[in-house]
Length: 216
Image (tube, rainbow, N blue to C red; front, side, top):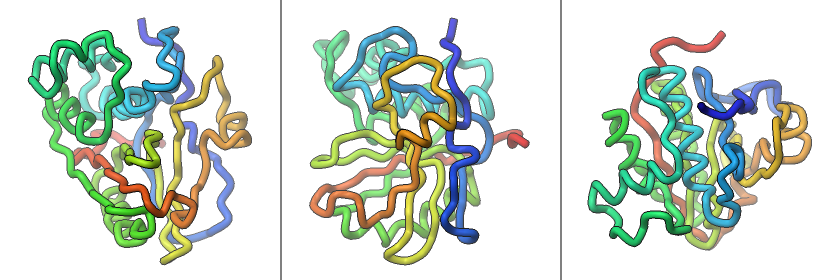
């Protein structure tokens, strides 16, 4: 049985800007450290962001496929020969590339990878993110090297060098968080692109599929 998780945790977040905001379409569940009782603290953030995207797939695109567990995800990557057998039951991280592989395998949905060679260049892709949310509306996975913390991207505000990304952070540990709690504590927040690490590269995984029915 899937855990009872908070949904659409970005909704109602305070906006300091009235225009040029673009958001995920449809419903999703918020997966985070320990949310299902499995202790993945310190290494499971990429899996949790992938599970959040998979919940969107289940709720909006392919409701007959359940969200895979962390162990399921590891088995998929081994079966695809992306990882060695020693990857099973390990605490090895996954990033945006592995997220693309799993989404393609499980849901038959292709993904686009956007590579940003350093955080200073994030301004160059904000229009790509706007176009993604307008055309598809699916959640985005963001990972990096120096900044190796996985992030879910649920929206973008376009304002040149002052643009911001709407982050859903999977590193929260706790039970039954409310939207207000997560937003007040900064687990869900608008992060200016200038606040990302300038010398970290970033890879973003953009699932190329639309919600079959949007939430109201």
